[in-house]
Amino acid sequence: MESKKEIYVGLLGLGTVGTGVVKSLLANESHITHQTGYRVRVKAALVQTFEKERRVAVNPSFMTKDPSVILRDPEIDIVVEVMGGVEPALSYIRQALLLRKHVVTANKELLAKHGEELMRIAKEMGVRLLYEASVAGGIPIVRTLQAYLTANRVSSIRGILNGTSNYILTQMQLEHVTFTEALLEAQQLGYAEADPTSDVEGYDAAYKLLILANMAFPVRAEMAFVRRIGISKISPIDFEYATRLNCTIKLIGEASYDGECVHLEVTPKLLSRTDALATVNDVFNAVTISADVVGELTFIGRGAGEMPTASAVIEDIAEILRSPKPPLVRQQEIGMDGWIKGNAIKQGMYYVRMQFSHLCQDQVLGVDGKTRFESVASAVEIGSGEGGLTRVFLVAGADLEQIVHIAECLQVKFYVILPYEGEFVLPEHSEFFTLPAV
Image 1 (spheres, one colour):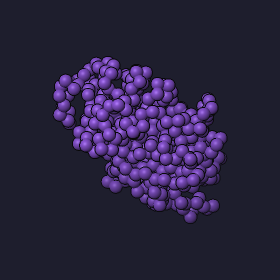
Image 2 (cartoon, helix red, strand yellow):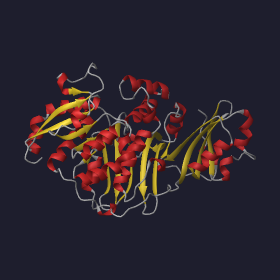
Image 3 (tube, one colour):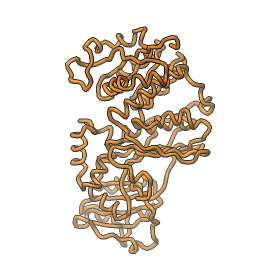
Image 4 (cartoon, one colour):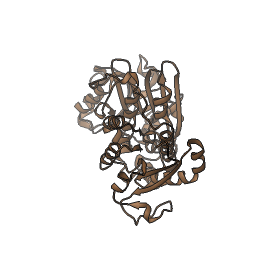
């Protein structure tokens, strides 16, 4: 590839991100050539239909429905996959790598589930597999872990990894709307898909967290190890209590490793207003890396959309042009066989809102005014509503599974459990922290 001055790229997908890549390569052609020494040309794009209206003008001959036109073209050195989903994207990427083509992908689900296999193939074939665009859009978090923190031991990664959920929660907080209303607005603006499950139930953030954790830690984990809770049960009343606790609610992905156990979770949390992530609103993402030498590094930027994701794809293309050979494997990854089986148990404080029927009211409240939570932890009731059939508690010293177990044993009609990361210390006497009912 070094002997060429013109490099051809094949696109698998010409949707939002694919059109962004085409437009960006055209707009920045001279700059990319100056930086890398190569002129980058998109030779062909795989599409599902020719009739679809696109946000970039392309010659019809540029598009194809046959993946082999791209995968078997000897002139195409780099394949960019922006079609999404696991199949047929996995088969196409595998084939491209086996044909010794470099691959750039924005596909977080595919990488979370099959990344290890694809990286092994890329290494064996002597080509690059890059995926900056798969996590946090235009934020260069993947490159930071791959290239700039190799002398550091990363202990934790924490952040807002899904722009759609962050937008919805921001609207619920600032505009006092319901989850359904905020979701509808996000869909109208193009931030949320027609089927928003992956975003609002935490799958998208979990895929991204898993990719980062498997890069940062000398172990390998899988999706089954990620404790995941979505935002669809959160209501305006939860934001009322969060405000009174000087908190806000954010969907947080967190990965930590202490040398023995790995902890992976994606869950909405009550964050103190003093937390750096509390001020990250709308569709923005933020990631904080904690490492032993450098300390904490925080990155904030747009986490999705046409141009931020296209920017990450183009940066990966430029990286391939500068360094077409795979880098040496980091020492900490050598000899790691098997998986960490399990998840570190984290005890802390939780905000719990329960709705229950008259039949189970006595079971929830127990006897002598004590709650069932006090069998496993300290608990303070901070509010009630709907004739006493909705109760809100702060529970300290319990694990999430213990609280869920109690809620399910009581057969409550509805419950919301959010980790509480505020500054409040649970008092010995609950009357010091009783909030009026919302």
